[in-house]
Structure formats: structure tokens, C-alpha cells
Amino acid sequence: MAKLKAVLIGGTGYGGAEILRRLLFHPHVELVRVTAVDNVGKRVGDVHLNLQGLTELVFEQVAPKEAVKGADVVFLAMPHKTTAAVVLEILDSGCRIVDLSGDFRLRDPDAYAAFYGAAHPAPELLREGRFTYGMPELDRAALKTARYVASPGCFATAIALGLMPLARGGLLSGPVHTVAATGSSGSGANPQITTHHPLRAANLRTYKPLEHQHVPEILQTLRRAGGSEATTLEFVPVSAPLPRGIFATSFAGVPADTTAAQLDALWKKAWAGEPFVRVVSGRQPEVIGVAHSNYVEVGFSLGPVTGSTRRVVCFSALDNLVKGGAGQAVQAFNAMMGFDERLTLGEPGLWP
Image 1 (cartoon, rainbow, N blue to C red):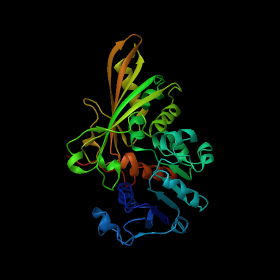
Image 2: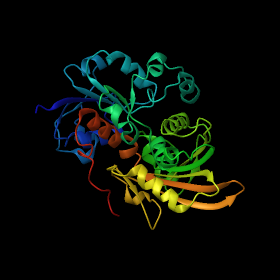
Image 3: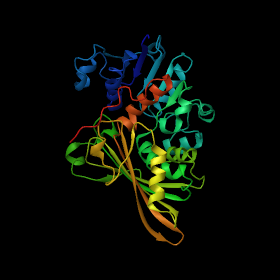
Image 4: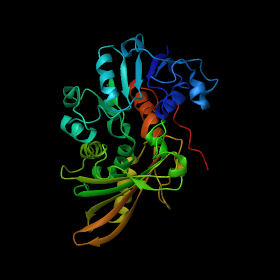
């Protein structure tokens, strides 16, 4: 079987580094080009030191249409709003697209404008659903026939997977309150005051409280999974003093007569046979168990009855750069091409 020719546009960031780490060892892929706007002319291994000696590719500065010539698939690892313009240039190129940005995840252009701070340049592509949402646990069947994939966001993946058993069980119908802590790599490779180690390493701080751009994406995902249209989300993200990982804690209400055994059955049913979702027992999810891997840990805790409802707390943990980013993009690509979804992704996290 001939290998698929792959191109990565935007390869110098942390997401790009993870895409490279996976694709360089993919048995069905030949990585033929990596483009960027910085570090142009440098070898991949001179920028991403963990990849030194593994490829002779250099970062090129090439126009998008030229970059994808002859390619079977292109991975886009660029910032939001920048990516949409590139997509419009290459949409008729004939190659498949896997986009890691948020530019094509939503179906509502008004929600995009409200949460991303700019009108979408191609709202018809959102309304038409030209891009398949790339969460295999929800969209596996659609991915098998997809040509364009919008890979989910890191917080969106962690929070949605943590709550999805309730949505699938018809128990997600009211307000949800979530606090989720994330590692510094989620802020990108370019240093800034909020990721500067002397400040980040001994600090906790919130940002974008109640207005993070993943809110409409999470609600869209949960409603498609079976959650009520009346479901709302109040989300407070927290910058945590760790390089990788997301830990999400979501509070929801279920009927007062709901038992722990019923919820345990929902969680096990929702994730039965899923290669990368682990329902933990005897403890709650932890970042250390999934860091550097494509795995997700999920769990719950059932609280007391208040009136007609009972509080349930949903926990989830993942690596923001792998299952929350590049790893999930490769998993969706594998599903799209009919490959085993675990290709280049099956290794466990690091311990400790």
C-alpha cells in the first residue's frame, strides 16, 4: 500500500511538534513538507529538539496552494482566524484537511463572531457543516466519509467527554458549572507573562471567566450527544502550574432518585469499547495518568439530594496537546482513512 503524502502547515508550535512526533512514525504516512512563518530554513530537529535526527525536513515558507500540491492530506496547526483564510485558499486543492484551530468547529456563525471576536470569513461553510467535527467518540461514523475535519478544542474535549454519559443517558437538562485547570503549553510556544515560568510555576489564575471560546463548542457537542437544548454552561478556566494537562470538574443536577449504580452503568455503557477513554474506579481521574498520551480518564461523584435534584460532579483529565489537540487530530485522521485509530497513539503516558 502506497503511503499517503502529508503536509503540515504551521509546524513550529507545540501542537505542530506533537503532529510531527506522531506522523513521523505513522506506518501509512510520508510527511513531505512542513511550513511555517518563523524558523524558516531550520531543520525540524533544531527547533523541536526531541525530533533531532529523525527527519531531514526543514521549515519552509510556502504559499498554502503551493504547499499542498501533490499532497493527500494537510494538517493545519495555526491560530484561530488565521486558519480560515488558509482553508479558503486550499479548499479546492483535492487534498483532505485536518484543522486543529477553532475556525470550523461551530455551526452558528453568530456564535463564532461572539466568542472569537470577529465575523467568520466563510459563514456558509459553517452553516453547511462542510467540516466534520473530529471527536471519534461522537462522530466516528461521519469521519469515515469526511474530507474535511475540524479537530475539537482541548477544554471542549475534556469537559464534553466528562459530561457525555449524562447527555447520552438523557440526564443532562439543566445548568452546568465547570472549573477546569490547564497547563502552560496550552498558551502556545511563544513566551508571554502568563506562561513565564517564575510566575506560572507558583501561581493559579483564571482567565476569560464565563466567556471562553470553547463554551458554544461544548454545548453544541453535548446537545448532539443527547443533552437538552435547555442545557447551559458557566465555565471558568484556570491557568495551572504544570506544562501539560487539563483537569475538569463539572457540576450538574440529576433527578433526586438517581443512584450511584445507575450512573456507574451509564459511564461504562458510554465508553465501552472506546480505545482512549478510561473510566477509573477506586479513585478519581488524575493528569499524571494521562500526560503525554492520548488517553482520557473520566469519573464522577454523587452528592446529596436538594429538593427534586441530586448533585453529580463529573471529573475528566487529559493531555491538552495530545487528546486535547494533535493526538485527537491524528486519531480522527486514522478514522477518516479507515486505519486503526490507535496507530502512533497507543503508548501510555509517562509515570511519574
